Length: 222
Ligand SMILES: NC(=O)c1ccc[n+]([C@@H]2O[C@H](COP(=O)([O-])OP(=O)(O)OC[C@H]3O[C@@H](n4cnc5c(N)ncnc54)[C@H](OP(=O)(O)O)[C@@H]3O)[C@@H](O)[C@H]2O)c1
Image (tube, rainbow, N blue to C red; front, top):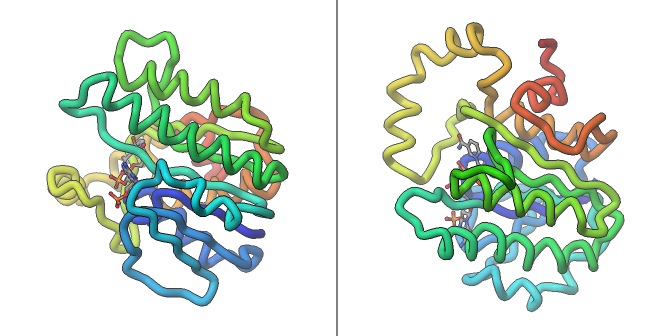
């Protein structure tokens, strides 16, 4: 399986990248992003684009992928709707529309978040909901929307946001207990990666995966 990955430098993206590199059936991962990755691997290729709106300059590299994983996103904190929409809806659609043209046989997996809803009064949820709907209309072989809730970073993975890192660190002693108490709501970076690979290999009964679906797709019995 050839995987095209956007957002590999982020917390969720690092988790997906790890599982892709460990998977025997993944032959190649092409990461496209604006920040260099910290790791090298024989299966990993990297294209750096300072501005991902310029994705068309790499169009010829986007062909013949089996899976496209898209955990690229920004926080809406202190952002206007126009700015958030530009970096969320516009950037993602700009990239995904071109990728659908170049690799129409691919399965596309987008990471939105729990609570995503095109009819929501909450700005981020509405924008991501509209984006999900638009992505599902693109001519990919299949498209799945991943809506994780809280995600526990594993295997030394860190978010670039210092505040979130502090929160993850503070909660890390109780997270295993919280996962036992709320198994349908909390997942891990490893599970998101495993779930995405499983969905790319054999699909999923529905196009939108809530946190419990992500865990089930990753092979967790709940
Ligand atoms: N973390 C969670 O607990 C959680 C839970 C539910 C949903 N989500 C969603 O999952 C997605 C990823 O979250 P995350 O925690 O992995 O975030 P993150 O650690 O901040 O990573 C975001 C990724 O997106 C890239 N990116 C952001 N803006 C970009 C831009 N303008 N141009 C190019 N690349 C850009 C970043 O690249 P750089 O490294 O170059 O900045 C990075 O690779 C987000 O949409 C988030 O809302 C996260």
